[in-house]
Image 1 (cartoon, rainbow, N blue to C red):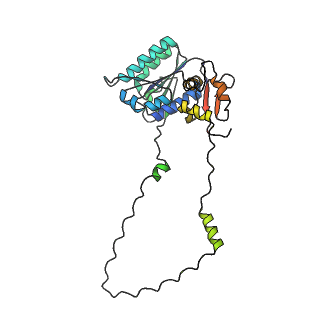
Image 2 (image 1 turned 120 degrees about the vertical axis):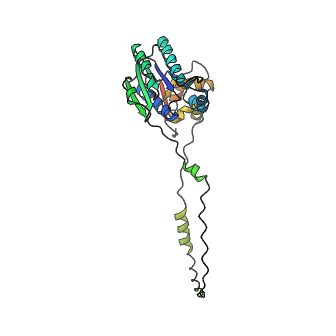
Image 3 (image 1 turned 90 degrees about the horizontal axis):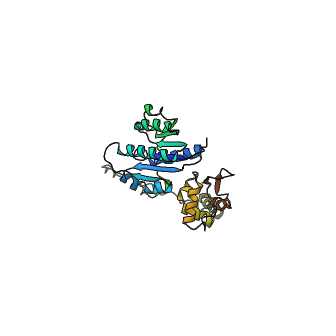
Length: 279
């Protein structure tokens, strides 16, 4: 379903992981087609810890000084009610596993909003799901150690072999040395070397400078998740990729349709990076 009006996303960033937030944004973009307001309520420590993540996803961190257990929850609720009263969004999404937001959800629905909930699998109570129009659990995905990181570690040393016990018996005569193997024939040696040589791997195609510049201006595009076209356009203007305010980001991106997908086709609102491909 695609929302006809504004879509607002409120994140309880002290309650869910960045992995869940990333999945939640991808889910909302796929279902609603846009996220116009993106706010993450958190402590100053969380904002500093995840500042690169927030910047890459165009999320505005709203810092709340901790004055009690539910300080962040209350601040999020006040912010949501204030924005809904003035902006009248069509959809409000709350990303949290906390059941304390039930009164907020009910009030937002009374304001005419469709309220969706997204929580972290294993942390959300059953009693908090029913108040939302729909609720989705996202599993936290731990960061895996890459093969390159493992290769950088020093290999474990094998334990030294224990010395053989001294024998009191007379030592047996040493066996005669085995005859040396015959030298390999030249052509057989060459075949063995070719068999051991690793197969050549073709390097990935080089990105055109314009595509690389766009990804540098808006790094979040590199995740392959659909992003708001207007936000990407602002970043392109900021980095002088688009020379004027009237220049169309969709027209520029369509020149590289093998790398970027615009949706919907007639009046694009989102753009998704398709990966490194030859032009």
